[in-house]
Amino acid sequence: MKKILLLLILLNISSCSSYIERRGYLFDEENQKEIRIGMQKSEVYQLMGSPSTESQENGNKFYYTSNKFYKYAFLNPKEIERTILVVSFNEEDLTENIEKYSLKDGKIINYNSNITIPGGTEATIMQDLFDNTGRYTSKEAIAGSIF
Image (cartoon, rainbow, N blue to C red; front, side, top):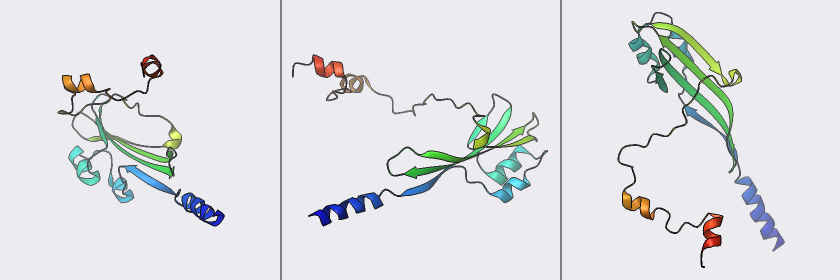
């Protein structure tokens, strides 16, 4: 019995493997080296592909963002590498500035944490009314019930 229990524990521990997960844009170093000041916006788009994000608020910019995370079992992933390439354009859509940031540069981009709900997924009145049916997670709801 002890051998079976020990075997099960060893199998569970071995299933908790770690791995590196890549997210975002996958950089090609050769393409990055070809970007230069004065290039047309369409040339950068053709060379680098679609950016992770485009900004019109702080000037016309392309953001190419790549992240690496270390994941172990069920624990929260830890970001171990971040690369952000920012290509700025002027009014004539010519490359004006090229900046590269990493994880050691800290928080340079202020992400908006608001969530955009895709069209067609809005809740109907009936879904709103019956949304919490069967959910008793609040201490007040459990303590105040007659059950």
